[in-house]
Length: 227
Image (tube, rainbow, N blue to C red):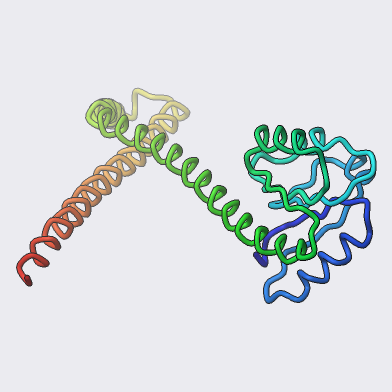
């Protein structure tokens, strides 16, 4: 919670002051930003993990909620029409309504802690999904390179062979052509070294995967043997 960003959105100073004081008494306190409805309208959408909405004067709750990040959690601490609150909860599943009762501030802190943990878990899940998609793309590229390895090596062999044949008879070439062929030969050798390293890495990865699979298969057998 220490690294979390929380916005307290309210037009009542006492609401923000009491909630901030309660948070300051906790062992872990998020970064707090207090905004009025007017400031909310003037600035761009704030980046936050949680928004605690207190009493507002003439603000449109639906419009405010529409501007929030889809990951951000929302705690609503206002008195309102039950039907309107029900419609808001149906439209924004991450919204939690806490009535302004005697212990509302402590209830907000408890719900906020759980909401921030859920928000962090959701953010990590989305990050993992993006990483998995990126890794899948890299794996596809790697498989393509493996499939094309022999074709690339054959093309390189042809380029190197023809370049070496031309270099065996330097007298038939101009100085500029000779230098260009030497450059082509040198670059082809470098590409060949890269392809050889790629093949070596592919072999190492296969051996590592086989060893990992062997350990995984041996572990259950070892456990059953100890029984």
